[in-house]
Image 1 (cartoon, rainbow, N blue to C red):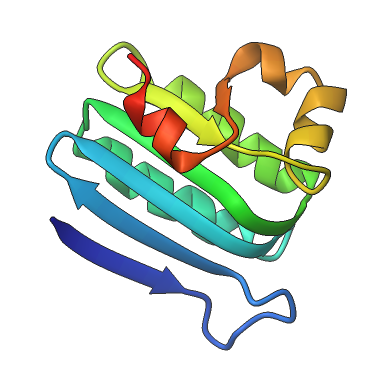
Image 2: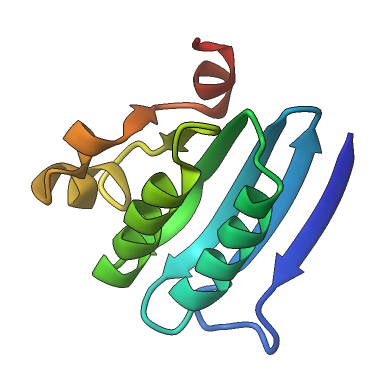
Amino acid sequence: MSSVSFRADPPTPGGFSVRVDNHGETVVVSVAGDVDLATAPELGESISTVLERRPGLLVVDLSEVSFLASAGMSVLIAADQQSGEHTRFRVVAAGNATFRPMELTGLTEMFSIYPTRDQALRQD
């Protein structure tokens, strides 16, 4: 397993960070803190870099996200579209900070969403 970490510099008030973990054909992008207009571009860049390698599965884990703005949801939509046929795209989201905004905007119908990382990695 190899791991690459990205972190906003200087740290944002929401403690935003992105961590990329490679597990063979599976890549997990773990996000923490606030995903808003200021931090969404960094998340988008990290995900785009991962998708250029065409992994078999990309899991974006939002379980440590404290706030998900529309800019963050736009990044997820772009990632889903960019993943195409070559990469399965899954999102880990539960609770009011992440699942609820996606539910209200209809994104729960668009993405494969799982309550835990383990479940997202197990499902096929």
